[in-house]
Image (cartoon, rainbow, N blue to C red):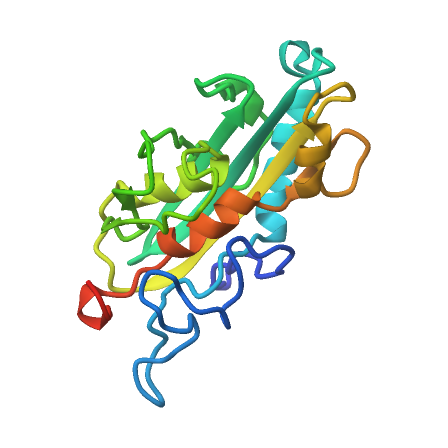
Length: 237
């Protein structure tokens, strides 16, 4: 058999969570695509947090399973979100899923992962305890960071921040970052009271989307959480 190189994860960019590489990072105050030197590597290992076609396929499979679960979608007023994240750090690969809304406890069960062929059996629930205010958040590198006090909805337990904090809780050695990617879905029942608010993050489709964008609170929090610039580079460490 001829030797073949392993295929790289799909790099198709559909959505950016938490801004673009050309934005200034609120944690380190550098532009996120700044290099250490003229020809050096980027300061940020994650200048942008994007999704991919492969992750959208994972969320799509979970969505199909959810649509058959009447305990979830049988309620016409139901509103909930979920997300998945994949990362390759220092050669190690990590796969998380998370849910938010509907109940405080995770509502995604193992049965909702049936049929996933992309890294089958490697998906781990992300359900970290999040800070009660803007202080003491955890970056993906496992370092503490305080968020701006003006951020609204800072305590909202969204799937996106659960995924990133769960990665940070692993306290990985942080020498190389191949990728960190995330996809989200939002389900809005036809009689949901806050449908107008939730549909702002709703993609295409009558009742749900598996290409949802992050909410305002997450868009503000994510840049802090994905900043992996070492403390030696921080203006005010």
